[in-house]
Image (tube, rainbow, N blue to C red; front, side):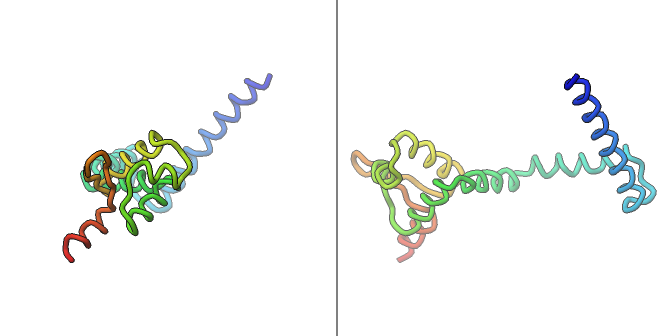
Length: 133
């Protein structure tokens, strides 16, 4: 019984969505058919999704969308640190910190420099400031 009702809810939602799209096209995209509208906008979507600048920007947004990574980034802007120091600071494991640092590094936001046994992580901005001083 419940599954039958769910099916009708889904069908009703689909019809409502189609009607809303048709009304939008009639109102704001005058002289365009639904098929033309979808084809034009799908090509715009594909162009954006395949743009290297978009992909780079997406990596940055993904890297900073996590609270811990955002905080790590802010800390590394102030003071370079190694994985073990960040793990103690965040009260978590080295492995968890390494995972977050890898995402930040892949996004080009931080740089890890090997110093003996340790890898010290710097925000890219703070490293540029140190080099230029």
